[in-house]
Image 1 (tube, helix red, strand yellow):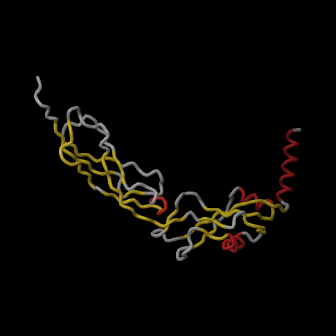
Image 2 (spheres, one colour):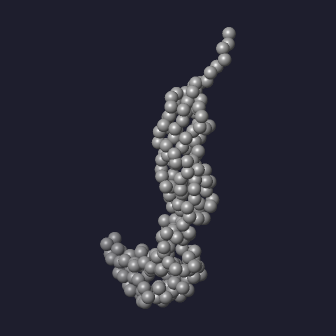
Image 3 (spheres, rainbow, N blue to C red):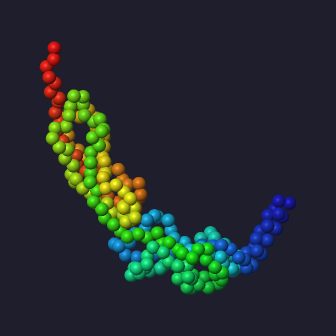
Length: 215
């Protein structure tokens, strides 16, 4: 009985897939651009969504993203790069999917996720609130950090919201002599932002407090 039920469902599914249907589907899009000027703000892939009419198998293939060749749109020399109108993409889709009828788009606008590449200078500071010196010791003179500034590269809209101050912490405690070590820089939360280096050299001298003579 169970096998007969499965066979019936399978036959029904085959018959259904061989008929025309209406469905909301999506198609992947890849943007071609000058990566010295523009970059993606996230790693999400762009897709255009639309309501289509066509054979069930073709709609299912789009639903499951099987053997789908993405549309490549070149925006290298276009001033408009943040978004495209769905109507601009329709000819590309019709070329890729001649067997489907595009009834309408689910959105009039497709945002590319692109932003201008920006570089900003970030200053490195040592966290002086951190307790890393031995008891009765203090830093003598200045803390030397090399390099004092590093470059951050990333999407302009993200860099504009970031602090241009990077605070680093030492991994050692109870320091009672001259210090000179490479210290790691915490990487930005947004993975699209990159620093020119992930370490800086920190050095300083220490001295012991001179306490006045007491009875």
